[in-house]
Amino acid sequence: MKAKPVIPREQANRDVDDAVAYYLNEATEAVALGFIDSLEQAYTHIARHPATGSPHYAHELNLPGLRSWSLAHYPYLVFYVERPDHIDVWRVLHGQRDIPAWMQEPDDV
Image 1 (spheres, one colour):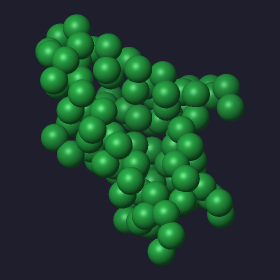
Image 2 (cartoon, helix red, strand yellow; image 1 turned 30 degrees about the horizontal axis):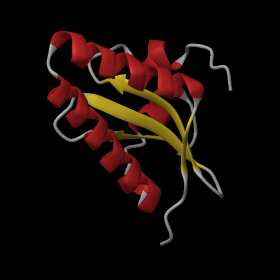
Image 3 (cartoon, helix red, strand yellow; image 1 turned 90 degrees about the vertical axis):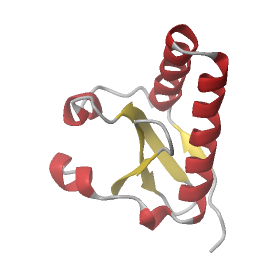
Image 4 (cartoon, one colour; image 1 turned 90 degrees about the horizontal axis):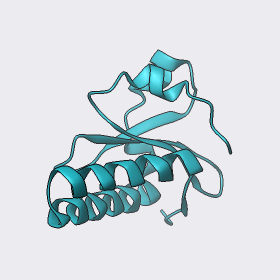
């Protein structure tokens, strides 16, 4: 299967910026860079194998097609929907958050 482009929404980019800022402030630059590497690996995986993400939250939130993929070594989930020509990344959230509440936030896309 050909990889599809991964296109994060503005809110997903803000989520990533917040996570990187947190790791830079609370840990080290190496930890922040590791987060970015793990995110890039997740994006590469879902670009090639979008159907492998968990549909758990799709059912809970009544958002058909929504899937999530866990980052390796970091407690974050990438929330996305496969579109015919790309992967639409909605959010990148810490797994311990109240996911349904965070996913309900308005998006500016």
